[in-house]
Each structure stands twice: as C-alpha cells, then as structure tokens.
Length: 92
Image 1: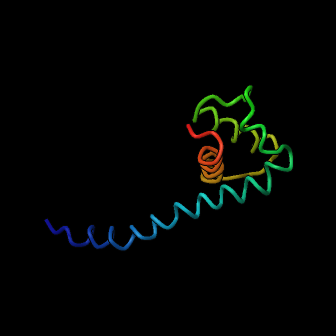
Image 2: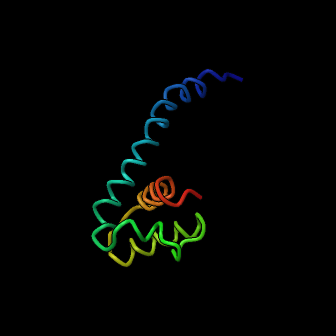
Image 3: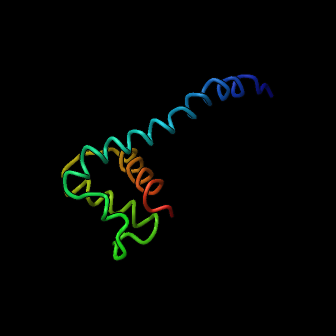
C-alpha cells in the first residue's frame, strides 16, 4: 500500500487547517461585536442569574438569537460565536 499521497495531502492541508482555527475565533468575535451587542451588552454573560448553564445551552442560545434576528449565519458562524463567548466569558 502506498501511503505517500495521503501523507503528502495531510502535510499540505495541516497548515491550512491550523490557521483556520484562529480565523474562526476572530470571525466569532467580529460577528458578536457586530450583531449581539446591538441588543445587549456583555453583562448578560457574567450575571449571577444567566440563562446559559453549559456548552450545549450556549450553542442553543446563540442559535436562538441568530434565528430571532434573521441573521442567516452558517453553522460555522454559530459555532464561532459560541466558541468566542465560551472562551471569553463562560469558560465551560
């Protein structure tokens, strides 16, 4: 079995995959700053009685807000915003 082709493909694709992770995080912050803070400030993420209790709930809340505001985000956009919020506020 010749493994050179898959290995070469992986070696070429790996840097692209690794550099896209920070881009997604930056995209999450950009989407958040452009859309979410037009309705509320960041205190909703840190208040004692916040609605979101876990990572699944955070993802559902981001999806709910996206749909309620007819933003037409992709699943990757929703994931990026949820990831940004978790990293910077929720820390689940």
